[in-house]
Image (cartoon, rainbow, N blue to C red; front, side, top):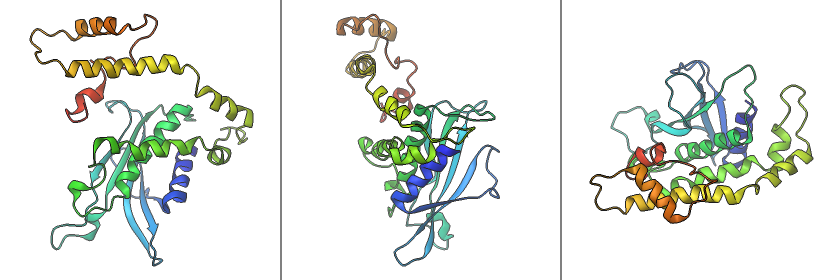
Length: 253
């Protein structure tokens, strides 16, 4: 809850957005929180700009990973005699945190929440005439820009000092721990770079094959990694057969 509170506070500071929880709106699961997202306009009026659905906890049959979805994209053009609320986007963030008496997030988990919240802003702040051009319907490289930018606000001292508190005592995170967190960012980067670079090179090699007759992915993977000189002590970050992004759509691949 503190991480969500901090993310919404950052959102409010950056974009003048206000999140009003609506427990009276029945959602598809009791764990899901629904918010009105409101913004004060230049003329002083308070305007509803989006509905935000926050689905943070893992549960049986829920897809793995974390993602942003839209139940309705923003648009200015709607059918004649339609309710004007149909112009308002309905955006969701979906995570898979383990729910417990105290749901404590690692820094990586908190970064994921901020990342997906950045995608949510892409949908909530969309201002397009046609739904086809709204929200994340942009060039693929730009899809990840709002999410990457939002991530960086998590580690700002002003945010951590206010919201990163001990769950029992309420004590503020000490400076020495923040310094350790900063120092750890550069730890093991050589290993990590080989991990993801090997994945990228293998992916490009797979997509350059012209004839897939009698193709064995496992055999190709082993031969290509050997050709690249992959160190035996390092494995790929994502094996081709399980990396969901490769199989979601041909466009994303």
